[in-house]
Length: 271
Image (tube, rainbow, N blue to C red; front, side, top):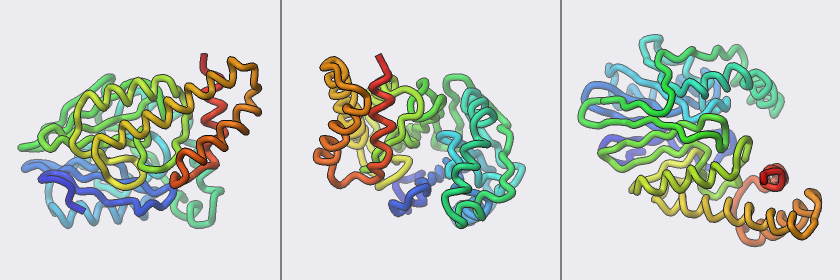
């Protein structure tokens, strides 16, 4: 699916555990954003890349360390240059094994996809940001601190005004707050300040900057209501019961409501 002059996306079709995969094509190289789950999906991604450009050198990057985003790159040629935040690599080393096990137990299909996965080591790591010149188009990769994970990696395609938001930005999916809800909100403010014309969420349909505002509105509502309930002396369990009902009524067409309890408890614990 062509999005802009230099950007294509393999859409997720609103299927859980399937990410939107990005392809950024320049005159001299191609950047692939996320891989799909396991080498089988990685092969599909690579085939789509090669339809666009059969011979271009490849750069690869991952928005975060979760299996559906990182575990397919072993299907890519070793000549592909994997670029990743150093903190994200540390998190992958420390946390990916139990998460891979969890995902494998979700269904026989997931178990088959993740069988014999070998995580590639990055060729280049960076601390805060890095720019990749693809020829006529530049991709800026950068991190802003913990939110969905410890090191969510954002990709801004500068000339096209396209932002890949990873799972910090989704379209009508309740997110999973694994790390820091308050910093997630601050991160969304930083992303909004970039004024992207097109936003590719980690999951869900592509949109504009309104996706950032909508995600921020949801998280801010959850944060403020959780604080109110805690100030009123409500327990975490009571906050979950009350706020889950409010959120489902306020966002009736959002998917994955099973994540709400964990998100509310995360905000309840944040001071």
